[in-house]
Image (cartoon, rainbow, N blue to C red; front, top):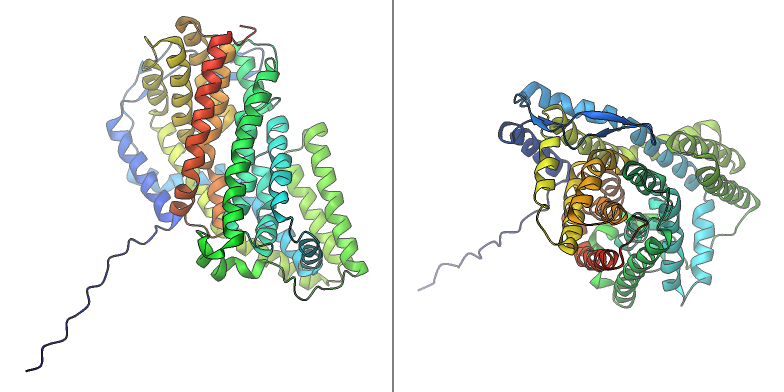
Length: 474
C-alpha cells in the first residue's frame, strides 16, 4: 500500500518592510500619540547672543488637546515634502550631475585604474576616507553634503571587494563621529554654547579627544568587517543586494579602459568642483543651494568636455534624478512625523517629561541621563540647531541645579544629537543613503547596532571624565 506523499511545510519568512511602509507606520503612531499625549507648550524668547528663538524653561504649560485629523494626517505628507524640498532638489541635482559624469565614462576609467594600483592595500582607503569625512563634520558641520559621495563610494567599495554597507558606513559613521566630537561645528556646538552663555567653541581640546575616540572605534569596526568580506565575500550582509542592484555600479579591473584626454578633462572638472566645495564650505559659508549649483555646473561642463551632446546630457541627468526618486520620497516622509507632533503641540510635552526624569540624580548619572534624553529626543527632532534651540534652554539651567558645568551639558547635547542620526528612521539623510544603496533598514540597524553600543560606552566615559574634571570654563 502506497503512502500519501508528505507535504513539506513551508517555512515562514518575515519579509523586510519597505522603508516607505515603515515610515508610514511611524507617521500613524505619531498621529495616534496626538490623542494620548497631553498637549503642552513652552514660550519662546529671542536669544540676543545667537538671534534665535529659544525655549524659556520656566514657562511650560498644558494647553487644549489638538489631535491630528485624518485629512491633516494625509496633508502632513505633502507638507513634509515641502519642508524637505531643499534637500530633495539637492539630491535630484546631485544624482543628475553624477549620472552625466558617469555617462562620459571618465569615472569608470579612473576608478578602474586606481583600484588596480591599490591592489593589496585596499583597506587603507577606509581610514583615509573616514578621516576626511569625519573632519568635515567635526569642523564645518557637513552631513547632508556627504550624500553626494554615496554613489561614488559604492562604486569604489564594490570594485575593490568590499560592499555597499561598507561604503555607506565609511561616510556616515565618520560624519556622526565628527558631530559627536565636534570642535567647531557651528550648527550644534556653536548654537548650543551660545544658548548656554559659554565662550564660542571653548573646551575644544576635550572634544577633540572625544572625536578621536569615536572615529578610532568606527574605523576599527568598519575595517574588521571589510577585511572579513574581502577574504570571504559570502559573509557580506548585503551580498545578494549588491549582486542584484549595485554590482553594475562597480568597475571592471580586468579590462582597463584607456584614460583619454576627454576623461582627464572630466576628472579635472570634478576635482576642481570638490576643491571649490571644500573652500566654499569652510570659508564662504556654502550650504545646500551653493553646493547644488556647483554640481549642476560640474555636470553640464563634464558632459560638454566629455563629448556628450545636449540630448545625451539631458537624458543622463533625468536618469540620475530617477535613481534618487525613492530616497527623496523617504526624506519627505521623515519630516511628516515631526510636523504631526509639532502641529498637535505634543513635542514640548515630550521634552518636558524627559527633562523631569533627570532631577534628583547624582551628577555623573545626571550627565549620562542628559545624553540619553538628547539621544532619544534626536529621533523626534533630527536637526542639530533645532534640537539645541528646544533643549539647551532647559538643559543649561538644569545643569546648574544638578551641580554640572554647562560645558558638560553641551557635550551631552552634541553626542546625543549625533548618534541616533545614523539609526533613527526619522533621519532623512541616512535613510536616503541606504535607499540609494538599496540596503533594507532592518539590515542596516542590525549591522550598525554593535558600533552604536560602543559609541554609547565612549559617551559615558567622556561624560564621567567631564564631570570629574569640572569640564568648563563653567
